Amino acid sequence: MEGGDLRQAVQAIEAIRQSVPDLGWHGFGGGVFPRQTRTKDLAEFRSDMTAPGQVEEFRRAVEFLQAVSRTKKPNRRRSSYTWKDIAARWYAQRHPGEDSYISNGMLIAAALALGFQVIPIDGGPNAWINIADSARHV
Image (cartoon, rainbow, N blue to C red; front, top):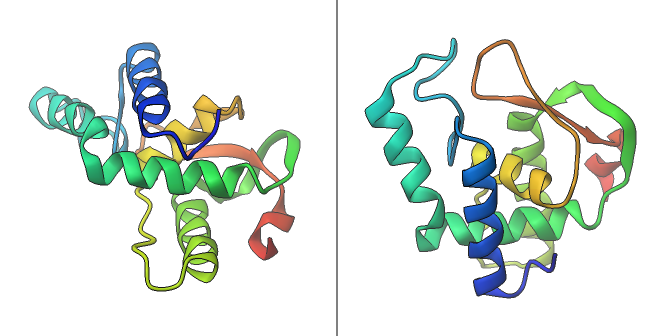
């Protein structure tokens, strides 16, 4: 999957949204840690995944994830929340002056779309992903 094609990005997000019913743009679940099932919030977070800003976050995350190495198992040293910050810094270095923000859920969605292993962490919004530690320095 290429991060550059807008239509392809929206289709990938819609496929992830269908296959992962508790993922929204903020991460897993309808609330914050610990995961709370707030149906209204989760429905809104899920609906917003294909809003223009979130689609751009997804595309940024795809670009980052296509540049990193994978581990055999999910990396438990850094959560998706840490990786989204690393990805945003990486993107900002390569695209000065552009918005570089990436939300937790859109990084997770991009990882799923690219076939990374994603394991939700303890009922919260974050996940372990099989991204190699070397990605901190890509």
